[in-house]
Image 1 (cartoon, rainbow, N blue to C red):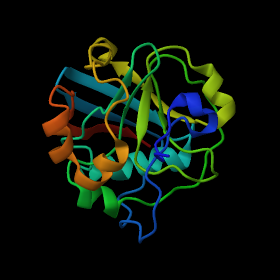
Image 2: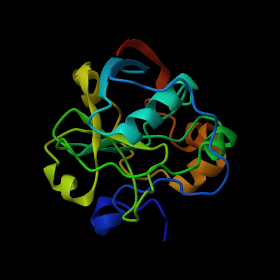
Image 3: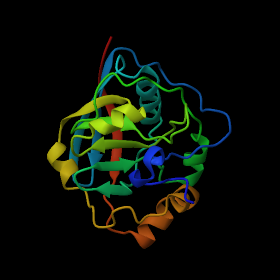
Length: 203
């Protein structure tokens, strides 16, 4: 069974890569709130992250953005009315480097439309690099432990237009192993993040 199970598999709804290895060196700690600009192939998406909502998740997202991890990353799972998901780096070697888990955060906000959460398996402390934007009211995910780290502050209309024609077809094991080489060849219409940058912070 593919370890990236779909939502129909209950607790295995949003699987991330789980692996061993040394976590990359921490970047400057995220304190308070910060804003990220995702320059996507469908237009800009501005994300506001509040570290109080999910400190561990907010810190990991901060590290990934600072490391330019998401540059070129494809939105590989798009289910209309449900979620847009991404989190594998363009280069599989980079994905492997960051394939380490972070501790869970208890949900302090609900997975309503526009909220962003880390994807994970049903196992404790299994979040890594994969995230999703809620396209609808997915409050049922709250009880499954999906803790929002922030929300889309602007550009949700661009998120709504991210290509959904492939649904959940991309094989996530192949994404981890081959990165964009696989996705560009077999799923050329996938939208993607051109760059992700922190544009402001508050202490």
